[in-house]
Image 1 (cartoon, rainbow over the protein chains, first blue to last red):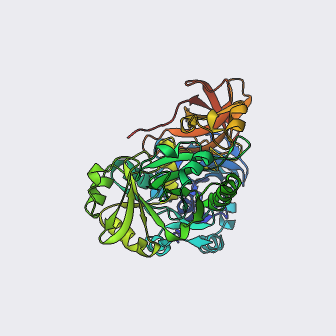
Image 2 (cartoon, rainbow over the protein chains, first blue to last red):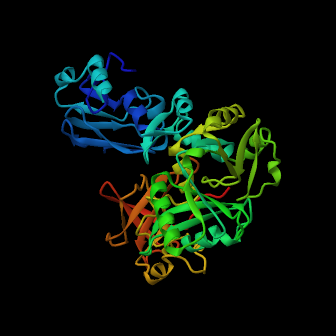
Image 3 (cartoon, each protein chain N blue to C red):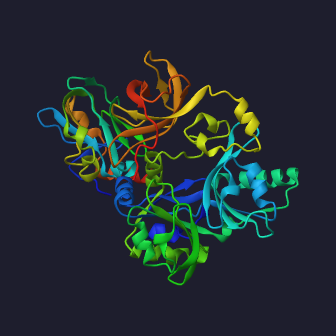
Length: 128
Length: 360
């Protein structure tokens, strides 16, 4: 399973970068994109929207199903990946790079360390 | 859970297997649904449809019986010709949709038709046909011979060229809806120029024991293995119904774009069907906004009232258009009518558009 060590993860399959100047980048894991299959539509949150941890923030829709994406940490949306609106397949091709979904200015950067590390997430994902 | 004779081939190719109508079937290969879809539109795709059922109706009144039991007209079929048809119940709805192939001349002792049914409905179709035959006293037998057949579909503009190299018969002269019993690399096969994708193509019936060899030869010939996912996006784009979605036991085909199947001759259940008004009609929808209209989603009119239900929807990998079928209140079903589909609480504009959404 492709789970880069420098990221943190959620049981609902989001990945999160370490806060840099209080901002994190969020996407879905390689495991999640593989399970979803070919992504055909993405709905992204509005910039400026305030999200609670665990709140539905985006939707990733594949041929098979539509899946809610949750805010892994509380914060405010500061940027979204507009390129995905025209090229949602980037999520399949590059889940940890071009397939990023949105950036959050988090309320509490220290909460990042409490998310799942790569090993912990891999164990959760393998359990299904 | 049943496995087709090609189960090991699917697993070896890395297919994602799912439960479908009691069968373990490939939903997609690592290629992915959009690429499989495009392979069929642009070249040739290969499907395992061995889960589908085959029934044999044979005897001097085989045609007379099926003429009574089904809504199309099997008397019109010549030997070696096939036809799409519908199997009605007695309440103005349907038991299944079927394909019939004539194997023996009608109204003779050799009168003989092969019936292809949906996997989920084989038992119900068999029981219904046997009951109806008995009740009408028709001189014919109805036998489920599904276990004697494997079925592969080779579909796409290059299907004829790729298959022609492998089979003994000359396929260039084989017309749509015609069948030929021939051999493929020495293995006995029946080739029918039929399909469910909107492309030129063939369905290849063979013995289960020969299925892995036939599959392997067709893959070697350049056909792209395709799963049920692409089969669904292709049939929807081509405007074909899927039983259990567009059609079910309550669906009156006279209220659908498939009313052409129903011929003007006596048939079981036809009076009940004609007596039922079309409160709702089955229509095609093209969404003007983003998102997929999935089965069960509500259809809305201009005032936001719920006026129908989506039966199936997808986004076309070919055109990226978001397409759907829906049952909608009659009166809102004229071509070009502006409606909406409620997707996650939001109305997404949609236009009533007659299927097919694609023509080869």
